[in-house]
Length: 50
Image (cartoon, rainbow, N blue to C red; front, side, top):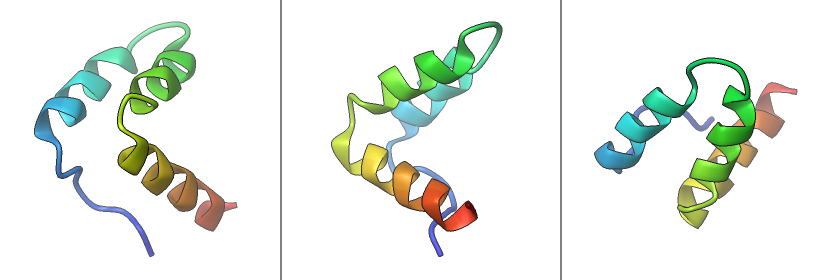
């Protein structure tokens, strides 16, 4: 199972900001795309939940 804190603390803080307000999911995905390793981790986590 994937989960837990992000290793990249700068990315974690930035994601915390972009998830505020309308359009949050799009900004989240766009921001996550800047880190291919974390983006893959997110999609695996998401697939496990479905």
